[in-house]
Length: 118
Length: 111
Image 1: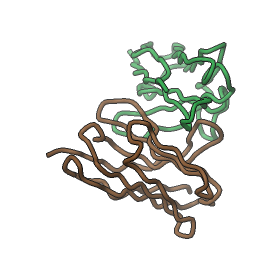
Image 2 (image 1 turned 90 degrees about the vertical axis):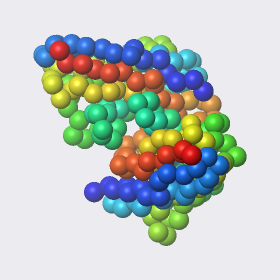
Image 3 (image 1 turned 120 degrees about the vertical axis):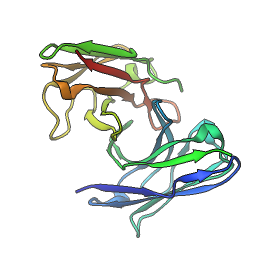
Image 4 (image 1 turned 45 degrees about the vertical axis):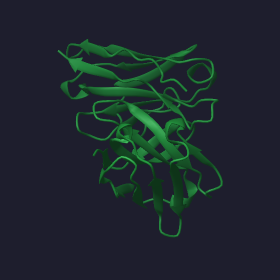
């Protein structure tokens, strides 16, 4: 069974940092592109960041470019997202998701809540 | 990359069929056969229900079907049931640098 379990969210002051983690199991992790997708309270879905299976290709949302670093450890079946200089508008539920084909995702974690507030 | 346009809400009575539209451009929906649909019940995680325009993952009811014409994709739910009440998001591959683009979301209400 595919499982994705996020951790690392929490309450942080504007300008602060957080490192999100995602532990994957139930599939060959290194074979998949992995993504972070976020959903602000009561809002829609937004791609945040992506990383290829071999860590050779990356994507960062324009709204967060320069403040994010995505990484993965295929030996530990884990995905990470370092977020710096956080802003109030970054408040959202951050999902770890597995890539599926082109432009879609098939498995979602439960999400980890990031709240940026003073 | 702008979000794909969806109606804010669609409603129907049990047993009826409803269709949700998803409008993009030639650089996303219109340019590729890679449209997906997600169902999200309140407080729950999104679930993939359609991929590559009209394919259903294992375990998804055949009451859900997808199609595409030009820059607009559609999700049809037939035999509407109470449990179909949820938010639905479309998604598409895109020629831009983003891994994909999501729709604005549609709230389905079962009357």
